[in-house]
Image (tube, rainbow, N blue to C red; front, top):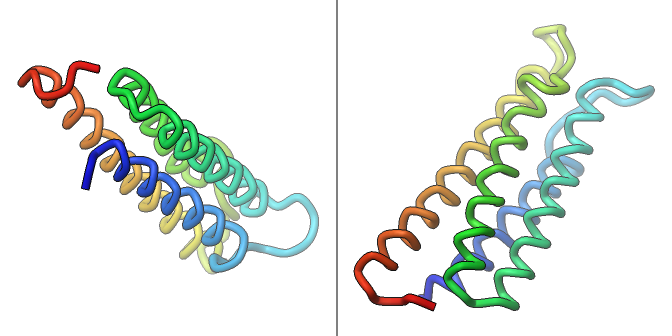
Length: 135
């Protein structure tokens, strides 16, 4: 599959998966403005950002655009991991499901997306050095 088709499709899948995990599947505390609810809302918004990146990548199949979008996707995925672990956090009680399940799952999802974005970025840089695609 062409790299310029694979990256948008993968980001589309990552964005939808992040939204679905954050808002439908992973457990969070109900009521008030709990940190776990805020974290999942922010991560769902970052999933929407990944969807926008996927659409832009599909509309502009140029190497320079994809390099920029891969870097942006990497930054977004780092924030996906940091929001539930460092920036906002989850409930401080270790027995809560959001602390045991939601935070670690979102952190791992962010790492997986970051690894994909970094691999795509390296692939695009390596591909350009070989002279295969200079557009």
